Image (cartoon, rainbow over all chains, first blue to last red; front, side, top):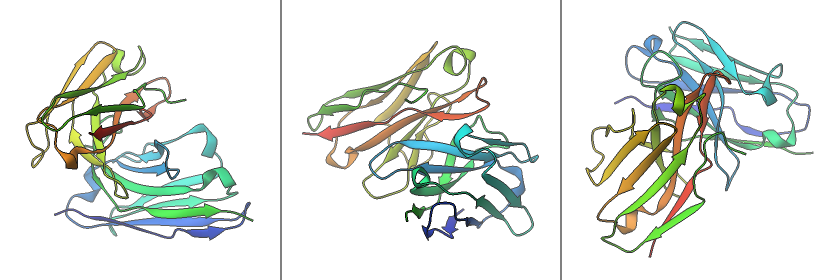
Length: 120
Length: 111
């Protein structure tokens, strides 16, 4: 059974940085698109960044230039480098796997999430 | 403001049928991109319940069904049970934004 486990969340001051990681079990990690989805407590889901199996990357406008997504297919891991953090980045961050290699397919496996709090 | 529009809440009694709508536009659902649905129980990660408009992942009961037509989609749940009470989200791909987009979510209350 494929599992995703996030780590790296925590409390950080505005302007600070955090690096989130997502460790995957199972095979063929390289074949799937991977995503970071965030959720402000009590609010909806927002796909922050996606990275296709071929390395194609997208970001929502509000994090462009501040967040960097990367993947290591050998280590079966996904990362999100978050810089210049703002209070509005406070949210649970979920790692999710796409059913296929590109971003238009469903997210079939989700991690449990890691909380990021940006506060003075 | 979410790209996909869902009603904030729906409710139904045990055993009843409820539907949750999801409305998009010509750059997502209307461009023939598929719609997917997720169930999020309180305090847990989302779980895929319908993919590619009408398909159920293994383990999801056949009480859950999906449909799509043009720029609209629906999730139907029949034989409503107490443990169906959750938030439900639709998702599609938007080619103008070049990314996946979610609806704002619908809270299902089982009366």
